[in-house]
Length: 639
Image (tube, rainbow, N blue to C red):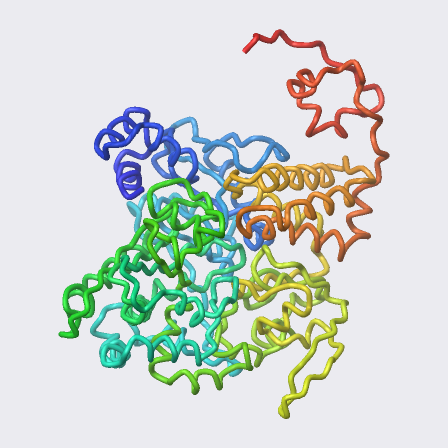
């Protein structure tokens, strides 16, 4: 993958000749290279314009004008896009003069500054759809210099915040170089950790109660304890920086503005796990982040914080940055490991392929999220017990929540886990809804989390000071933002991406946008995901076009039910949960979009081959309007 990135950056695309040359250079078969180029969306097999523009189409950007950005770009530069309804993920389209090309891409992890696009390798935020063409022309005339990218969060920390990980974000006197970090006490915790036993460090992490901040919320200390102290095989640590969940954008700012905090957390973790090699798997859409991390690694090496004999301790550790290429599935830990090994990101079956047992190169491997690894530094500084005083029992420490959608002040907020309610987050910290609007729903943990309806009542059990537990009924505004409360409410804390929907939103349109994402991002390995995600997308497409039949809501729910729990990895749940919850919570709106009668059975004279050829199986309800006539059969070869 590094060589594919290098080739594409130099030549603009990866030709058939490139496939052969790269395969020969690496001593593999051309098919091994082709399977990567066709799997990862960022790799191109055709030339693009001199200026290539990638427009985000996922939910937060779509809600704030992402489609209008694309429409105005195409109008300004004479680019013909396919008509609406023919799919968002069409091949890259190029202007007639070859100067400009555009494509829709999935989440760029800047949802708080939506809508966003990438011009070349630069991210531009808070795009004004009416002046986007001028922005592109200015960028091009300036030969690629930044053209006024927006400050993602200019307001100071909110009084309800408790910043640990984000302490240095947006500090006016802060820079990313190591001298600034050292002046602020940087790498002191690494020095402290190198004087401790590995068991003591693991126990501190266990006692802290730290849960993974990447989505699953699994105990970090327990995960670490799966590595045997007397392990003879090499142990690897992987930092999962493939931040691809729509609605989530916290890791971007850690990488861009405080890279040494992440490196220090990684190096302490390496020492605790006796891992001599660590990889930072960063998503391909973070090219600047990758460069910042590379610079930080070299600075740390120059100060002997990594490399051979770190600070005279006798411990060696190397850290490498590895760029992905646009596949959401590589956020799943075993899919990430496959990708890191130079293959398609197909998740592995667990068991037997638990990473702590059979991970990277079939060796014990720990995969932790960016934010999780940053917390390690603070646990060493505070001590596990003191860190556990933050937040609530089983929901300790701080975590970063990202708010986007229909709020007046979208952005990131670091809070003690469970110390802030959903209502405080939306109405106090994020500035509330647009004047005159009411809350309709909240997606609390990234696009894969089940939606919570604003007028629902939730029964949650809460632990009291004396250790007893009581059950309380509460509104959505009263739900504490912690792992257990959101699970009890029927959703999940997930990756911390809170997407707010007001009463102007069409939930069928919202679900269709989410379905488009998961249909595109399925790796295709499991039949339920590969077929079911696309079926759900096609049904919501049809409902939006006015062709919904009365059985569609039930069919959607049935498809979702038959995906969840039947796939190799959790992508099955990720694509099924939105459909299951939206259809259940907003049944009246889906019923209103599904008014047509169920079509009659398919004509009996059709053979299975004809059904497939005429594509009547997936689109049968559309084909059977009154007056529909069987088309003339086409000539078919025996092949």
